[in-house]
Structure formats: structure tokens, C-alpha cells
Length: 142
Length: 251
Image (cartoon, rainbow over all chains, first blue to last red; front, top):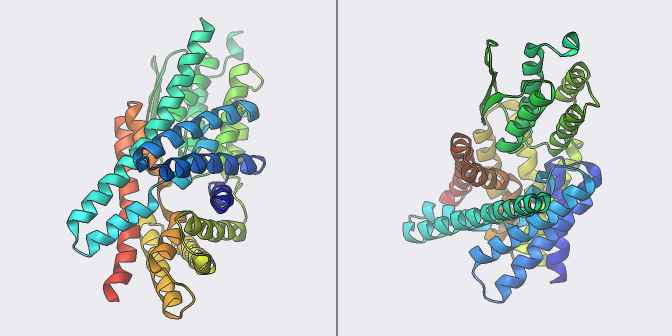
């Protein structure tokens, strides 16, 4: 688990460099990615479906990103984009492509559908969390 | 008071410039539209319409002024510029910046290059490849091979993208190189699990940002933007997949 935490932290921070995030937010980006991956991997270890785990992790990432965005007065996209990078189903998409090439279409379609579902779940998680945030803000303003 | 208000044409130019920079740097569609409308309204134009797609922005305001169009050719991810432009638009709304000053600042930002030095980017891509390998339950033995292949792949991507301005081709070639070098490393006995090494080193190229932004735009009602971003993501995924596939086809 410690290996997972460290590697996800480093990977997310490295991705933040590739995305050219502001230098002072690199650490926070890494933290968001680590937290999201921690949620995801713990859920998967308890035999939850990868789609559901991605959804919850993305939701969680969006919440942390919103808090950070408020604290550091930066657009939320900086944290949320870097944070979801570990969740992106790159491995599944790769497997799908590989099976396509090997003419194993049945497995390939299954894997592709799964990759699509996971990326959809990530996006829905982010959006729902943002919508909830706006709802809370509006209710508070009233 | 009247002559203090900036000319509407200038406001349109200002909004478009801000929108262009943000869109080129990978901001979400709604943020681009929001920023442009907000700048316009704080400079005395309450109603404006913007139509943002990944390849162009149309911006018009009510009245006799012409609608203006800006074509976007290339999109990268540069979150620093997004932050800076966002800050400028906030300053305009709060009245801390006049439109002339803001325009000058935006021009500077557009020309400036804030990216990390290339060697740092390559290093970041290489290290993240190694880390992804571990996150996908690889073995420590493959850590160094993944770093090497990831770094080589990223160098190849940057280099070819500078030579030929076609992203698809650059991604394709980069993944071919990744596949080849991963195969070589496994063949030489340095790496163990070919699949894991390739997945790890391909990750810096994977269009994760695009896929999520695409679904998000679709849900927010920006149907054209969402679909075209989805198409771009699909193309990228195809390029990577085909590149790897070619390597597998030969062995």
C-alpha cells in the first residue's frame, strides 16, 4: 500500500509538470492524485467494481480539488485534471486495443466498453461533485 | 464617463484573445465561455454570445458590431496559462485592470513560454512511467525498463511533433518506439513483463484529460465541443493502439 501511495503521488506530480501546472501547486496536485488512488485501490481491494470505485474516487478528488482551489485561488481544473490521471483506464484501453489487433473481438469489445464506462464514471463523479458544490453555495446564499 | 468606456470592438478583441489562450491551453469549454462573457459584461457589454468549439471560437455581442471568429489550430495542456488568464479576468471584473492593460498583459502571455524545461518534462514523463508500472501491480524489476521506455517514447513524441505538426503521427511513432524498446529490453532480459512495461510507458501519451473533458462537455450541454474532443481522444487512443499493435504484429 505504501508503494501505491508513493508511486501515485510521484506519478501525479510528474503529470502536473507535463501539464505545466503552476510550480507551487505541484505538491498539492500530487496529494490529490494520491488521495484519489488510495480511495480507488482500497475500494477495489474490497471487491467493489472498478467503475463504481472510479466514480467514488473521482467524486472524492473533485471535493479535495474544490477545497484546494478555494484555498489557493486557482481554477479547480489544475487539481482535478492531475488528480484523475491515475484513475484513467489506460491499461484497460491498451488491453482492448491489443485484443482488437489479435482478432479477439469479443474480449476487445468487452474491455473497450469497460474503459468507456470507467472514463464516463470519472467524468460523472467530477461533475456531480461540482453540481453539489454549486447547489450548496446557492442554498447558503439564499 | 462615456469616453472612458472602451470601444466595443476592443472589448471583443480582448475577450477573444482571452478565450483563445484559454482554449489553446486546455481549459474546459464552459470556463472559456464563462470568462469571455464575464470580461464583456464587466466592460459594459451585458449581453454577449459565444460559441466555443475545440477548433474555433465565435464571439458576438448584441448590436451592430460584427461577430468575430478565431480559428484554433493547436491545443496543448498548459495549466499555468489558464491560471494566469483566469486571474486577469478576475481582475478585470473587479475593476483592478483596464481593458488596455489587460490586452497588453494577454498579448505578453500569449507569446510567453512558461513550460518547464524540456529535460524536466522528459524526466517527469520517464518517472511517471515507472510509477504507473508499480500502480498497475508490476514488479520492481521492471521499474528501470519502464522509465527508459517512457522517457524514450516521450522524447520521440516531442521530437517528431516538432518535425511534423501532426499529433496523430507523432503519437503513432512514439508508441511504435515504446513498443520496440520495451520488446528489446525484455528480449535482452532486462525487463520481465512486456505488457506492464508498455502500459506504464504509454501512460504519458494517453489522452486522459481529453476523454474526461469530452464527457464533461457533453453533460454540460456543449454537444459539439464534447463530440469533437471525444473524436480527438479516440484518434489519439487509436494512434497509440496501432503503434503498439504494429510492434506486436511483427513478433
